[in-house]
Amino acid sequence: MDRLKRNHWIGITLYLIPAVFLFYFSEQDNFGVIFFAYTLMFGAYIYLVRERENIPYKHRKGIIILFHLLPLFVIPPLSPDIFRFIWDGELLGSGINPYSLTPNEVMELDHIDKSLFMQDLFDRMTPLSRQHYSPYPPFSQLYFFLAALISNNLLFTIIIIRLLILLTMVVGYRYLIRLLKLTQLKTSKAWILAINPFLIIEFTGNLHFEAVMLTFLFIAFYFVFKNRLFLSGLNWAVAISVKLTPLILIPALYRFIRFRKAFLLSLITGILSLIFIFGLLWPQYVFNVLNSIELYFNNFAFNGSFYDLVETAFYPLFDYRTILIFGPLLAFLGMILILLTSFMKPINSSQQWLERMMWVYMIYLLLTTTVHPWYILIPFGFSLFTNNVSVLIWTYLIMFSYSFYGLGNSPWVTVLTILEYGVLFLMIVFDLRKINKPILKILKW
Picture 1 (cartoon, rainbow, N blue to C red):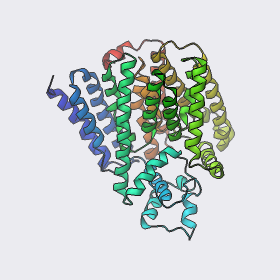
Picture 2: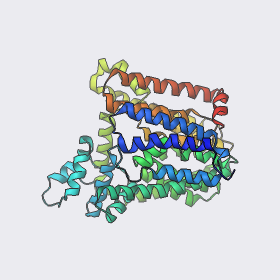
Picture 3: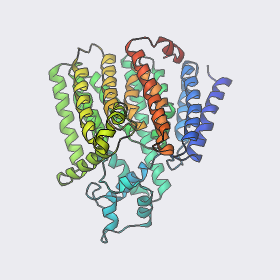
Picture 4: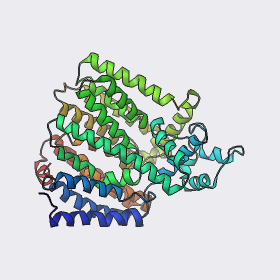
């Protein structure tokens, strides 16, 4: 058990070869190449998941490090968001609040000194990003700012942000293991998250911040179990100030711990969240950010499930007003279902609480108009504490969404979206009806 077997080396190699090709030789609009490489990676991943108990712990750690350091020196090939991240950091480094001006406005002002580096970042941003105020909450901005303080070289700045995210993920991994121990689950289940190619592509590679958010949620939940409410509220507030969506998880807390403690934890979380958010998002800029968020959700839909069905049915009647009408309606329906799911019955164990929050997040994602691949990390992280495999399968199916960048409005995109959600809903039914045992056995879950 102290050495890796030959078949383990083969699995690692079959994972690494397409990963190298995907990170260093692919582009966002080359869907066929992306999906083929990802399929090879995911097949190797499933094999390594099955073999996790046969791979010594020290080797598992080494493999995790190897996989995550693979894209260290690459400019994210599948997402342009990093250029806005660095832009915001450069503004902060120049003493300009990133919520005060859109990139277009910055470039039009003569009194702001604009370097060749800033011009390059502006050119690499999407037109949609250029015309909107920054939508990224303050704690995310801290990462951008730290990188801007150290470097104004594009690749080196990306490496700094990547290392900061990786260090945060290491902390998250350690707290995930602690949570698995507290819930009396095998700590090897952390391996299922750590080497998932979706995690490495979207977070280590493309540098999205849900991985940071998940880390602080894991820490917050650990301190809930330890009955240390202030530390739990502190970390929950940090997660909220990375991305606002952890707010939807709070109602389920009231069915897990006593009302007085739940209320106190909610109060601590709420107060600290306001302090963290308004430390940078000053009151005069709130409407700027709200305007950007409103424009985003009212003008852009991507890889939605129920919304795509609604749009297909009602677009001939409402034209471009479809998202304005049904987007808020689905959001309201989602809010009602989230509250019902959170309060529907008592929660008698920590595992039940984590599973309840997984379903809360799934409801949110299934009823929102936009589901980018990185959004599904949070329910995937929670699913490790359950016997539900639907989100794991979704980490493969979600790559169908990249077809939009290569195929645009082609009917094939619709076909692939139907395939993605058709299989996902089938897996959800299997999970809810507890008829997923054959899949659990295959995965050695």
